[in-house]
Image (cartoon, rainbow, N blue to C red):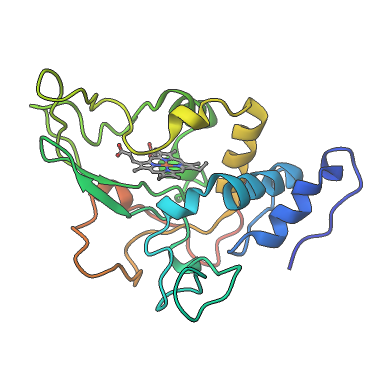
Length: 221
Ligand code: HEC
């Protein structure tokens, strides 16, 4: 159920209600900016396809109703049990780093995507900065291994790979703030519960695991 939309100027943006309508999980909006959460949901779920990469397993006949599978019809349903919890495995890069999407859900502190602040989040989206140093340039080894740089490859292990931050870097500050506010409102995924992963997925890196508030804990402020 979507909360009622107030008739102030922010909420007159039609993306707000649409954002609430399409959010695939129950949102905890207490203490959050209602309009920003709605716009953030719209950007994440209707435009930027964050869940296409950051939800694992995202689609598949056994988990959801992705219309690209035979027998399923549009619009499809995202797997809510894994929503934005990260863990999609992309590739092993030269040097041995396994590139996984990260957990974007709020942790026990209530801050989204691994407890990063808004300023850090904006820096990640604009500059691809990897605060977790998950795969530093070789020979140093991070949580996901290391990335072999020049002269063997042109890769910079200090920056996020595959993540389309070069495109997202053009988003306005307002839009990035809205996405961050929305990420505070989604359920925490600890990766300690029975989140099913496709067979053959390499072990999840430790940085995807986090503590979640108890289910009956009050909404984060
Ligand atoms: C094409 C796939 C893809 C899409 C789409 C995508 N991401 Fe990512 N994202 C990744 C991958 C892969 C990583 C980890 C990269 C690495 O380890 O080098 C990542 C990392 C991140 C990180 C760093 C997390 C941390 O803890 O430091 C953030 C934040 C993030 N993504 C947010 C988003 C948001 C928000 C969206 C939608 C606006 C999005 N991503 C869309 C693939 C994607």
